[in-house]
Length: 559
View 1 (cartoon, rainbow, N blue to C red):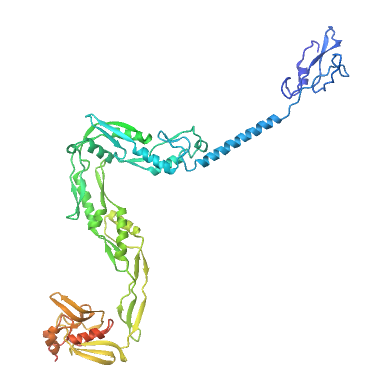
View 2: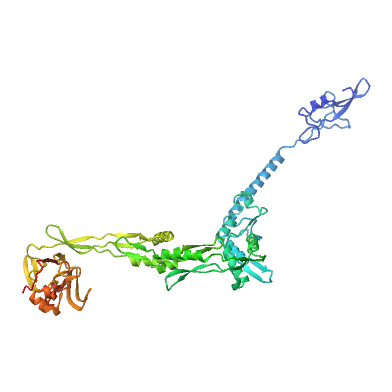
């Protein structure tokens, strides 16, 4: 070092890592002057002690101590450990943990509630649950009003509901609860706002009708043709409309939209008027009425699957029928109230179609052949799911077609019991033989004759008693008997076996019975008997008794 200053080489030796003196965790080197050594120029030589040279103990006398090489000892700089860095890292981790914990705690707290920063228009709803939000939404909708003015000085304050605006409160509340839900961090950040509008549906036709009714005199209004129900004729009729004027609702709709975004306030709208034709023509209304009447004429029948049916009255269908008018298109469509339809069928179908099961009873001969069914079997029916039937009814009404619809039901199958009749043995089962050729009745038990009666059968021609094998199916102690050309009141002891043919007392025909003369005294097909004989048959021949009608029709009296 010829000039007594540090050179770059000397510096690189002092800080091999390129560090400079004086920074924390580095050891400084203090220069000293060795007076015993001078350069050729006679100047004292300056040297630097190497790094990390231990400091020699202090010497008395004030002279600085030197090491064995004569160099003055340097004071070692204090060492600093990593304690501060560790503390900083721990503090940072604690801060992060606190932030994360706070985030999840906030998310848990606001679960099922409106997040921080969420507002309904300008109203803060942070922390409100579903019930509170519902009340807030309803109140905001109810207190939103539009002040409508026209050029003539008329002023009208209208609620949103007056103007054909319908609130969808469930969707609005759901939107408030779900606002910011897609952004996890923003969800709990009160400085990340989210303004939610009302969810509504606006019916332009209702808005126009309301404003027209309030601002335009009835005689100057335009009226659409309509369809009405005429109870006297049980039919729909068209009612003509008229031309007129109506407010232009564009500005009112703008005011409504402002309130939808910022509910609970008042908005203003100025309207002008325009001349309009009848929104719906009388011809369109007539076509809609004709379509509805055509559907009233189509029978809708509900069947229980076991023979019982119910036809929906056309007057009931008329009550379900309504007409939806589209003023912008000038059309009328026929619609049906399915809720009313469901309620009606739920009430009516069970009583109309339900039935108890009836077990079948029949009579067989000894060979196992069924001779007659004395009691017809009927399955039990219990109607169910009437709403599904109502949907089928609505489908056919919409299609404008008649239909027979099978009701859904639970079915209880009937059982069958048989009685074996023994007609081919002495003293067997009772049966009756009518002999037209002899004009008498013989009663048997099996092959044993138990009684014989004189009778007169049906008159010759189309009133003859039918030949064949039959069974008594119903009995009446007294009944008014009617036919196409007769009425016999209070007839006694009737036992029917073949439709309208049966045994009965005929006190008015004693002569015909005595003579056995169907030619001149014949009946309308029944077996005329004296009252006592008819009573014997009534009391001794139960339902199910076999009746055989045999023999040729006589051409004169047989007795």
